[in-house]
Length: 413
Image 1 (cartoon, rainbow, N blue to C red):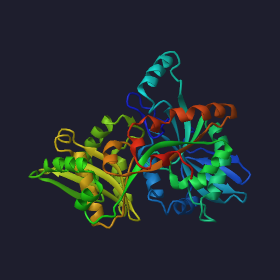
Image 2 (image 1 turned 180 degrees about the horizontal axis):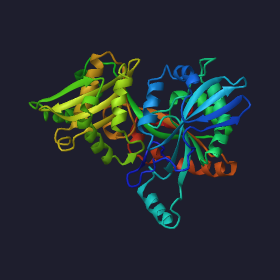
Image 3 (image 1 turned 180 degrees about the vertical axis):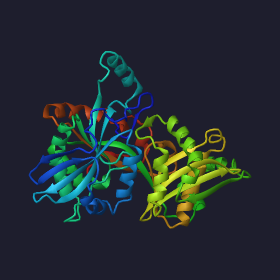
Image 4 (image 1 turned 60 degrees about the horizontal axis):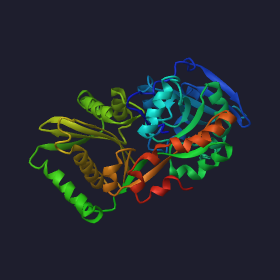
């Protein structure tokens, strides 16, 4: 099971047809007050919304961009968590999506499953309520009074099951939460949740003076020799790199490159839109940076990154595959990104999940991402607790286990 990916053959990311109508608000009474399901943040709660996400790399602006630009793929909603006086204390985004639980499992299992689905098409395809972000890692909204997440988590653990039942979701999933949340979220396991690994991110500490020093001190001889050979391929070619905060003037050129890369991916979840890319620069120009590579003036690659508090998050890339393999563009773009990060005082490079083989040879570390999963129904949860460890895809990736810190995917907080 990997809620960050769907199969290449059959996308499951379109929102279910029977979502609550636009503008609807459902209220569920709780011991702490109430939980209100809304499809937009009310004007009177805007300050709570902004404050709850102010410290995160993907702040409230990012969620707004994602919700607006990916609305045709997911049902995006907000849970307004209110105390007994009716005051909104935290606002947690969530989404409703239909997901194939078999995504990421071995081919032999999926072939067997195909035979079963010839008679039962919906087998292991489940409607889910996902807490988190549809285009990125998960975070928990900070509560306004304590400026902490503990109250929010307590409110969520009580309210999510009735919310899921109201929205007819068979599973509740905290999607792609970094391991730093384990100390806070692991207590969900006392309330029926099961923690399983999602496909991890990776990171590289940039504690070296320049890229040449990195090659000499971090990379093994064989890989170093291989990289130098790849880089020589571009010597004498006029491949240039520029960095911009707003990609909108170039979106018609770069979006087809994103689609080429997206279409080649075996695992998928969200599909970016032109609007997403343009709005990032327009609304988050203080931390969004796009790197653009040109060959003799023609754009052949780009990378979408977010820079926040010394960390560069390399989220999405697009490559022109008419030249990408010939000029080893993946490696060239990665090298140039690291060089730019070093020149701009960035101390950590953080890369999105997948494509683990080159990252292993780059001597990067895994950054575990966790799923906390439960069914709102007790009897169904008993079944899912048994099968979820078999469906999580990290156990089937042959490269992940080679990383020096691979054990962190399963260990405790």
